[in-house]
Length: 305
Image (cartoon, rainbow, N blue to C red; front, side):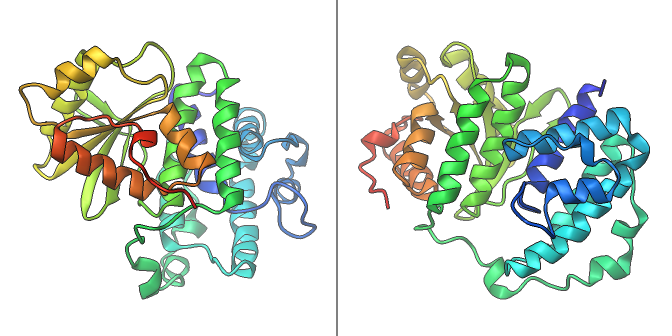
């Protein structure tokens, strides 16, 4: 059985690999074909793509560990062909992310670290490096895909929901070009991630299940944010929502450095195709005007696409 650290790394790898290849329907480049090429084809279990990727990586590490490097290389090689054919070639940032994750499952692949290979990606084009437009929205297919992911999380055991929820949020932020960064640990505390919006860095706290978030949890996260750079802000995402008393107490006697979102907010973004960028910017504006950390999306009067 994988250690908790390895299991978390597999989740991060699954998030990274999700857009590398299709799960099926392609006779040249697809995850089951890469698995077969690496000699672990029987470990691919058809179904929802992300759980299948997690299962493939986990089963290979647990039962066919000596094949893991072959599997990663097969995925990368096929992804280079697939993504270029889609007009969206693999990036140096994606390979760098992969190289940063592999040591956490005790692997290092020299071919992926080769300077000649890494330098072959060149510099990103100016249009790729440009900041996302405030009007950006998800495609209908991507919104449906993420909505399905959100529903799938409800069917998981409590121990894995939180990790999957963090992965879902990271993919949602990435879909809107917010340059998300996964969970990172500082001395004595855990930050669930971060993203950039309008030149500001937001630290993220994510809670999937349990009671609604109250005053104490809001204060704790606010203290984490206040302890970082003066330009840091916070986004607290609680699928279960927030208590009215906690929000009211938090808004009194202090300047908020947080904005908050609940599960209904996420549903509004995905079902009504409301821009997450617009949502976050309007929440920040309302917080500046009222010192209230949470205003529901349905009360922001934003139009969907």
